[in-house]
Image 1 (cartoon, rainbow, N blue to C red):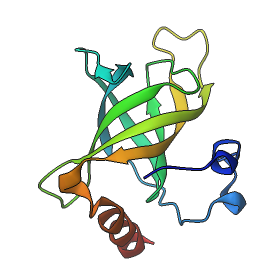
Image 2 (spheres, rainbow, N blue to C red):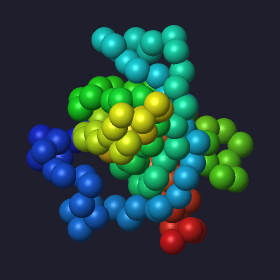
Image 3 (tube, one colour):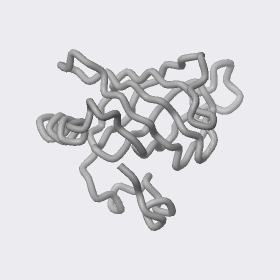
Image 4 (cartoon, rainbow, N blue to C red):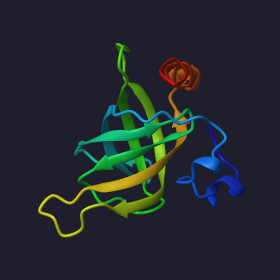
Length: 132
């Protein structure tokens, strides 16, 4: 899934500007940083604060810069297989600056879904609608 330039400048933190419903739910996320399309070997852990069919709000101990690309695996409750996607950081805010393990929150927009997961958007939408 790609987004046009008007999507890129949108402030995704404001619910009233979103076109898709967001579910406030914590799901485990494994992610790796991407550089020139290649994933770093180190996998990081995080959790969603909220989730929609177009993206998520990620909370982790990794400070993520705007425009960073991530390889994502989301563990949805009740699903046997993780949702696999590539996301791009739209915004990032430290929550506890200066703490020994600072927590960072970042808004991630989905940029790509693997071929086997073409139904992921439908899966996410159904998942969210069932829990709203």
